[in-house]
Length: 161
Image 1: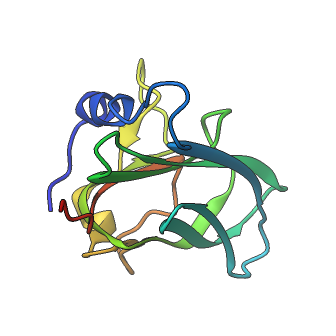
Image 2: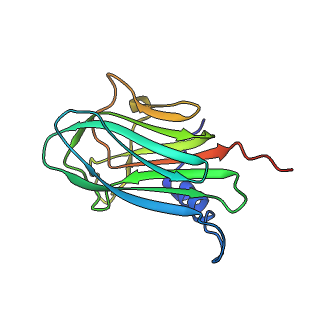
Image 3: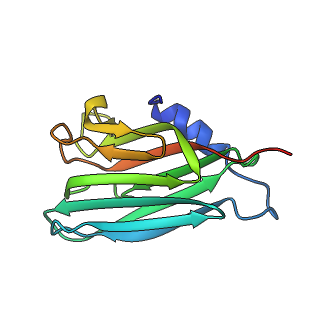
């Protein structure tokens, strides 16, 4: 599994747009990320594919986050993006896990809420999270509790006839 730059991932995600009149190819849902240390989950489903974001966070108050899922025109790629539209999050994530159903992760990138001069998307360090076949999970002892965005592109199990 490889980690790709935000620009390349954006190009891949843009390719998911289908022509009008076609079956639904993307969906975006809103959810509140709630502090307090309890584990919460949010899922979005698109056909037979799903993405579930499970987390625990501390500090501040509820924040409105978004999750978008999409399927490519040829049904070979499934994407899942989780992010805070306002950018920086003021919550500290004690854990996170994103899981895709019926797809195998090809690329994933996590982004920190730590601001670096002139950049709003600062990639998490490679040792802060682990990419599995269908999950992206924080890495105990290395994850610095800062998350503002998570992007996943997965290959579907779609077989051509």
